[in-house]
Length: 228
Picture 1 (tube, rainbow, N blue to C red):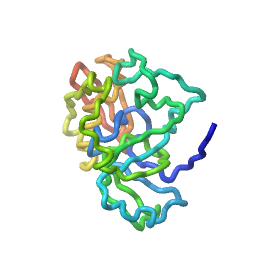
Picture 2 (picture 1 turned 60 degrees about the vertical axis):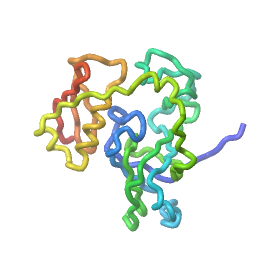
Picture 3 (picture 1 turned 180 degrees about the vertical axis):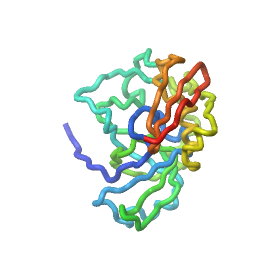
Picture 4 (picture 1 turned 135 degrees about the vertical axis):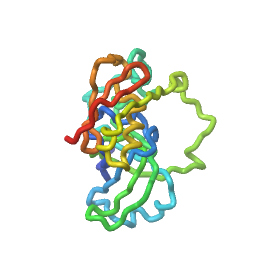
C-alpha cells in the first residue's frame, strides 16, 4: 500500500487553547480571527506570489488532538446529538483513518517582513491554536462553488442559534475587535449536543480569557469573563 510522509508547512494561531468552544465548521463565525505562520523552511515570500488576488483559501490541516491508533467505520455526529451512527466518510468527524481536516477561510491580508516571515491573516477559522497546516490552496469560485449541491443529513438538522445575554461590564473585558466573534461563538452553542443541563456552568478559553456560561432552553447567559 502506498504511503505518504507529510510535514507541516505552517501552523495556525487562534485564541482557542482547547477544543471546547471552537466552531464546528469554518465560516460559521465570519469575524473569528487567526493567523497562518509558516514553518522556517517555508517562509519564502515567493511561495505566496499571486495569493493576494484571492479572497478565500483552503487549509488542509491535521487533527493534532484527535489521533487514535485505530479507526471505526461509523461515528456519532454531534450535529445529530450523538444518538445516530453514520459512516465516517459521510461526516466531518475528526476520528478518521487519516486525521486530516479541510477548512475554507477568508484571507484578510498578507503581512510580509515580520520576524516570523510572511503571515496570513485569516477570518472564519475553526481551528485550535497550533494546528499544523499541511497545504494551502486558493479557493476558486468557478470550480469550488456548487449552488445546487445537497447537504445530506445536515439539510435535515438546522443549526440552532442561541440568544446570548452578556452583561456590558463583562463584554468590556474583551478587546473590541474580538467581541463580535466571541458572541458569534457563543450563539452557536459550544456545548456537546447531548448536554442540556440548565444548571451546569460551562467554560472555555478564548484569546487569553476564560469565559463561563450557562444555557437554559434557547438562551445562553454569560456568567463570568476573566483573564487567565
